[in-house]
Structures are given as structure tokens and as C-alpha cells.
Amino acid sequence: MPASRSYWKGYLKLSFVSCPIALFPAISAAERISFQQISRRTGHRLKHRLIDSVTGQTVDAADKARGYEVGENDFLVVEDRDLERARRVRAGPGEEGLAPQPHWISPPTVPADLGDMTDEGASDYDDEDEEQEETVPLPRPQNTRTIQIERFLPAGQIDARYFEKPYYIVPREEISQESFAVIRDAMGREDVVGLARVVLSSRERPVLLEPAGRGLLGVTLRFAQDIRNEADYFSEIPEMKLPSEMMKLAQHIIRTRSACYAGGSLPQSARAHPAQQAGETPSAAAIE
Image 1: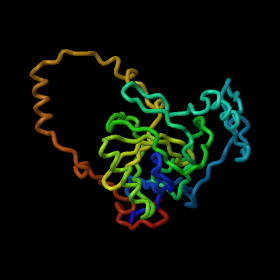
Image 2: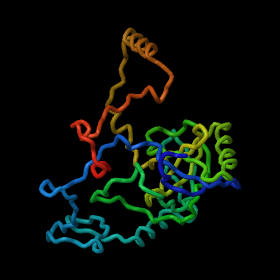
Image 3: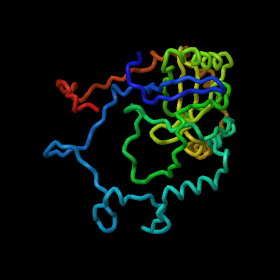
Image 4: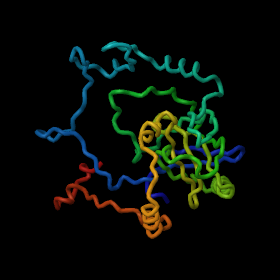
């Protein structure tokens, strides 16, 4: 049995093959240390208020709105219906797909009708408090609770810069294990990865699916517009004619230190809880 509670439950579908699944965060936050803002005098947790930047008055949550700056301290209120209208104008029916990718990636267009994936519980990947400057949200997609694999790519074709957060995907019921294994093993034999969409924390994200041992690994992907252009940083690096002796020495060092990758070979964190470093036992309330 998995050591933690599932983050999301739904269905995985490939054409006529379907099976109930559960998602679990692949990264543990056991050693992650976080702090809360508290009052030094009382020790109580602090709350943030919404303050009008001009009048200095407190603003009720019901009066909080989304605004687009059109001038100095002049904002146009943008409602959800405005975003929905803009989305429909930008992409007609059936035209919503993965954002365009650079030339080294050719992902397919995936319909945005994969269900509203409701979180089952708290996750190690839950987003931190939203910053004051919000990104433009998209309307929530239809709730089908299904990850439907729409297209496949050769394994290793997607650039690592697009990888975001990994999840373990497991069959949720004993009766679904055979269907799950069919999808997993077929992808493995063809040496491909699947592309789909998933909604986590009320946000729709592209997700890559690949076989991983007896299960599947799902990795949420960043959109193309989130990746900065490498030319903006590398264009001023000059091309150089390098001394052959220096190259031979560098290549020799690389060969002598080359080895096959093993997860256990990565450095382990030496962090300890602050209270443990001080010789105290941390209380449950002190740990996130």
C-alpha cells in the first residue's frame, strides 16, 4: 500500500481501454522546512489584510477583483466572463491544445475537455500563497475526471526544461490492474510517452505519462510561454577555437569520471529540523 494518501483519483483512458487510477506525489517533503509568520509578542499566527493602496482602508474579500493596468493606478476590471469570451475568440471549438513548443519538440494538439481533477487531500506540491500580481486564469474545464491519452511521442523527445512536478500513477482497484498493465506495457514496448492534460489545484496542465517499473510516472509540463528564450542569454557567448591539448585533458577527465546513473548516487540532504539542531524535540505544531 502507498505510504501517503492519494492526491487525486480519476480514470486513465486509452481509446476503449479505461481503468480507475490514483496519483501520488513522487517527491517527499519530509525534510522540507517551512515557517509561519507569527507575532513575536504573543506567538500567534499572523493574518494578512487586503489594503487599498491609495485610501489605506481595509478591503473585504468580496470586493477583491482582477484588474488589468491601463494607466498609472488606473485598472480595468476583468471578470471571468471576459476571460471566457477572450478564450473563445482566441481558439475556436476543438482548437484548444498544448501551447506551441520549440522546434525540438513537436507535441500534438490535445483537447481541453479532460475533467476537473479534484484534489483528494493536501499535497507536497500545493502552491504557496498567491502573489499579489496574478496570472490570467483560464475557465475551469468540464469535470470528466478522466486523463485520456490523445497522442504519443518517442521517449526522450521533450526537453527537460518543460518538466515540472512528477507523480506516481497506480491502478486504484484490483479489477483495473490488467487494463492498467496493458497501457503501461504497450507504451514500454513501443518506447513512447503519452501526452494528455490534467487539472490539479484548479489549473489545467499538460502532463507526460511514461512507464516506471510496475506503474506509470506522470510529469506535469510547463507551457511554451513559460520557457525563456536561450538566445537571450547565450547569444553574446563568443565562438572560440580551443587548444587541442586542453580539450584532450578535459575529455580525459570526463571519461575517468563517467558512470551509469543511479538515484542513490545523488547527494543526500544533511538538513535537520531547527529544534533538533538545538537539542530539542520539535512539537507537531512546529512542523508543517
